[in-house]
Image 1 (cartoon, helix red, strand yellow):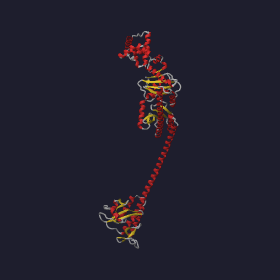
Image 2 (tube, helix red, strand yellow; image 1 turned 135 degrees about the vertical axis):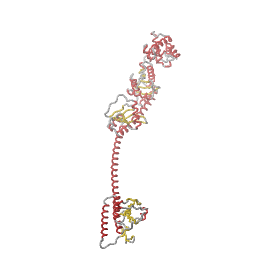
Image 3 (spheres, rainbow, N blue to C red; image 1 turned 30 degrees about the horizontal axis):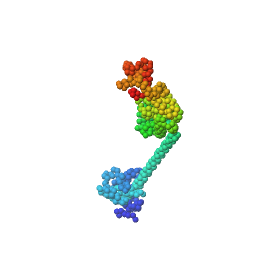
Image 4 (cartoon, helix red, strand yellow; image 1 turned 60 degrees about the vertical axis):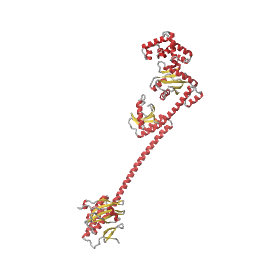
Length: 597
């Protein structure tokens, strides 16, 4: 038996509950009111069909509330839906549904609905009157409440219609929510498919990029393993990028080229501009563009060793080419750093070996040490000394001398002594070749080269070094004072130099230049130097005056003082010869004899 509400039997609910609406008693024949009730039920049926045609929840609720005024004096007050256990007002009646009156206020709606415990039941409005919460139920449970009001409790047929209205409304809401969730699921599924496709595309691109990078690593790795040097690196970069490639050292000298492109420019680039480009690339930490080239640096511990440059006037090189360039620079760094380390070790060993050779080290041991650094000491050698005005024998100067000797094809050992570069050269060097090559390296002609006597064995090297120094000193004191002098060219100077420590030579020097040396020492004059320059220039007044940077009349005065102080006549053949020999001895014997002491 069903329960009762207000003494009337209640209508059983499909879920086992009760609607709280009384069922009218059956009659034997439908009266006029019953036909009207049937019409309302038909209209409700049509409304239900309309609700189920895919409308959104807001529109369904609005249709339900618009239907309520058709049931006598009932008016809708709002629809409250269950949102995670709390009832929230989701729709309010339209002005047409309310009619002329204002909407009623439902105080404590949440508490009143909770007190119903999921069943239909009365609610209280602040303004009073009859109020009812009709549950919107479906297979999923209680969806919410349709709240209606009336001046007084409506008849049973009206309550039945209200109950009947809630069923399709709940079903339509459930259907709308199902469609919403279905659309959301479809949207999420579509989004997931799109994301999967995008992820696949990214993964494909990543695999392609990794494969390309693997090819770059393999190609450059083979170049490094095969020890193909700068030429191999340039060919590999050209093969990987399709662009002409140029490998240069830090100073802009071309080390290797690959691919079609402009020929080698005339001369070196402007040093200041080159340095600025390198500094820009250092700051950028990435390849930089300059004058139609993409330039990458090979650097080691903050020091630029060289560059790899892509010839790219159209600026078509992108990220792929930049990746190749950066990794090629790493390979070039290893190549140049290894070569520099080897060069430094060889140079250090070479300097130690030369120092020992100049001091007369053990012959057998020096041969073995020379063999270890790739130099054959057997056979004729010459000692060559190089000195430049205003230049200390620092690494820059030594490297310039080394490059000059290497450029001439001279196999040599290089070391420094004081402010002089010393080379032990295999075979006879060219008279002026080394001087010209060093001049080109330093950009200055103000230097001198002295070449010693030939060495048959290592024991001859100390003597050859002494003779090379003598040749250098003679050149530095001669006119012109810049150029190359060999020991064989010294002539009379060889005899004078060999006897520079002889007592007879000292006596001869004092006999002919003693008064002049003493006078210069006491008065701070340069009579001996003036006389030496006079003889060096063949007695030509103009050339001698220019060499001494004095006026012609000053030179005449000095020559007159030389005759007066020295007591010698310059127009006498014997006196002139002896005086000229004495000045040669003075020039070769060095500064210690300038004072005559």
